[in-house]
Image 1 (cartoon, rainbow, N blue to C red):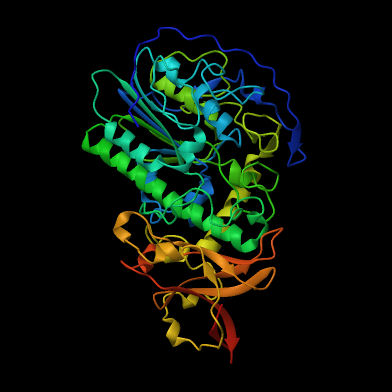
Image 2 (cartoon, rainbow, N blue to C red; image 1 turned 30 degrees about the vertical axis):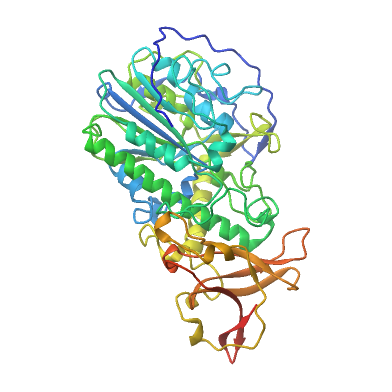
Amino acid sequence: MPKRRVVRVVASVTAAVAVAVALGLAVLEPAPSQPPEHRVGHEAARTAPAPTRPRTIVMVVFDELPLISLMGPGGRIDASRYPAFAGLAREATWFRGATAVHDSTALAVPAMLDGRYPRAGLRSDVYSHPANLFTLLAHDYELHVSEEATGLCPTSLCVPTPGTTASHLSHGKVERFRRFVAALRETPRPALWFKHVLLPHVPWQYYPSGTAYRRFAPEPIPGLNDVIGFGVPWLVKVSYQRHLLQLGLADRLLGELVARLRRLGLYEDALVVVAADHGIAFHLDDERRTVTPRNVQDLAPVPLIVKLPGQERGQVVDRHVETIDVLPTLLELARAPVPERVDGVSLLRRARGQLRRATIFHRVGTELNTVGGEYSFGVRELKRRRGAAVRRKTAWFGSGGGTDPSSLYRIGPHAELIGRRAASLPRLAGQPTARLDQAPDLRHVDPESGFVPGELTGEVPGGREGGGRPIALVLNGRIAATGRTFSLEGSSAESFEVIVPESAFRRGPNAASVFEIVARAGRPALRPL
């Protein structure tokens, strides 16, 4: 993807258009909800002297990244599993109480860039958001902007990314991020470098190393991580596992960006902002992306890390802030005027009427660019629920262990069997009939190619409708994963899905087989499926 650059400089910005907002209201607690206007007019006191105006501003917005995915025990970022996020937070200000303002990228990212709450009837382009980060800084900063799902930088200032949001999701997002990083350089004029990356957003297909475990975006079994898939307990857990694996790749890419800034000598004096647009939820029979009273702790809290120019020591700020506060913060640091019609408040200032409730808007059903209503909830309750969500996650997947921890793969029944030779377990008679979707790829595996068939799916012909049987996936004679069979709604087929560590593969042909795990004399045994 070609880097974005300023083609011409604009000296003024079109005034924002006022749009009426019609909102329904659902409240999680009996206390009354405050409308978004509760922030307007509050005086604010600066919390610290403003740092030097940055010559280099780097902002990265990750997509579909809940804060709880990064966190480990003790309320900190899991530094072993996600070292780049944790390393940046140690030298920056981590706003641990930050929340998103919409559950859809189409309105969450524009809200972050124009500092205003989502309004009904708006698109994700500069015409709906004329006064935004790019147009407001264009007079004083070169713009190097890479948007993947929005179009807020006008074509007079930026070269659009070829393709559509759907095409950006399905392929090339890792390569585009690395091209953005490679383009970073010292510039004659002050420069803004902005990257929205569709990671760890679905489709989930990467290990933390960047190796892909499936080639194409469509799932081998339709519905695996869609609505019907979230009706199967095992598939909810596997989807969460795959999200966390792909988050490992997002962390790796962030580390590459910070490393390049250091090599160029730009990091110390740069303003670096890392944020996410919204989260994602993993609950049985509940929406994963539309906010509900059950999943607000997964959708609303997001990472927001700001490294100020010259900042060396990190700090954690727990007061509640919102992603709409990013724009006024950047404008204040860049010594640029803040438009009057901005709902956000600079993160450098503490609002005297500190927010005690958080508001997140939701879409109409699954439609993008819609505002169907809002949920309001107390920030103390949110913090409590966030902690419970972290404990649930670590109970399932553990914490620490480096960027490729074994605990992320030991999520099935009889996980203690992983790594054992299948021949060391009792074997029951049976005819192997299970069909593997990845059988052709298993015949010729090249780990150095950037792909191994690590998502192993298939069907047991004539199997048990409803599934639920514990299984072991044996690869090259060793148990590489365990899981459970299932039947998707509307199907009588007994299917399976497991994720195998990339280290389990060898160059050349790989032999895979599926066994049911059964008990014999109080010990696990294997029966061919």
